[in-house]
Length: 351
Ligand code: ATP
Image (cartoon, rainbow, N blue to C red; front, top):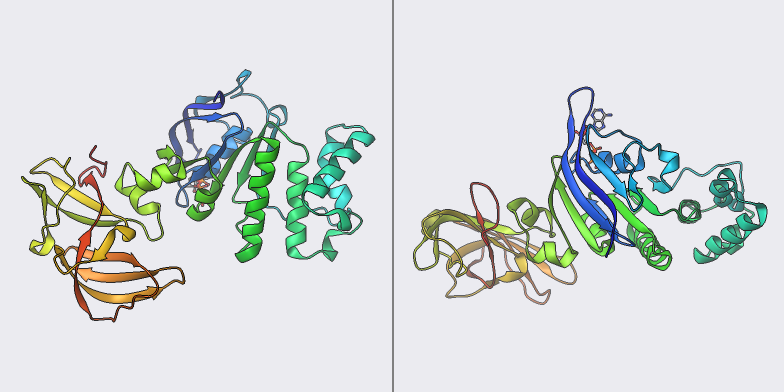
């Protein structure tokens, strides 16, 4: 896939000294749906705003297919920027709200009519075109706002937490709609969120950020299965990976807290401070298991249950089928089916 947008060495230091972005290198392919994911304050919005031209990078370059656009003003970048879907013009009809971006960019009336009709049909708004926003339900207003954001069909869409104010079915509906339209129109999209479920369900590639840097970029399955650091291992997954820290022993054991010795994957180096990371679905009860635990909470979540246990190596959460039950206070031994190993000092994964 050809690189359509390329960020190289991107930095942003605000006048008050805040280092919001500390060296981002990222290439986004044509038609790709990229999600920037990370905790609040990690620099997602600032990165997006630099791509849009709303912030000037302190260092680094932004290139699109035609070359360096770092210094180009926002209106000359052909980028659609969507942050919240709610800002509709109250005095305009649905049709005129959707038509507005086209009219302001100088499209002729016939072209405007054709494109607005196409977009309202895509989003199922045909019956509402004559109505004012105040007469619509919240969900319909969101769809109108989405239609207005999509109608111009720019080369690149930038979306900053567009669904933050929605929940439940409405959020899912909008997620589906955004992805379907993006795939259908093939528009390269960079989407910012701190919600990992949103990221995992939308993205071709997820870019996990922390403190102004990219910690890992990869497919949703790739970053879930092969996190490169303790940070990503814990941030991705709900709940994140369990960790057991200790000293690795020859023969493939981890000498951990409380004298417990879970086996380590074969590639573990001996005599090092290592952390074993295990996903909740890879923990199971086993009378011969190396880790004793006491149930503190049995959390039934419909399709599965998360069983929280206290162990000498710390808190462990295991995912089990809903039909099983676990009594608080019950003791059992645990075994791990699969794990990742990380260096405890740097948090990086051991290959
Ligand atoms: P959130 O999800 O909370 O929006 P974010 O990952 O998008 O977070 P940014 O909004 O990019 O993070 O902010 C990164 C850092 O830069 C934060 O510490 C923030 O307080 C700071 N910051 C953002 N804008 C400015 C500004 N104009 N002046 C000074 N500091 C800023």
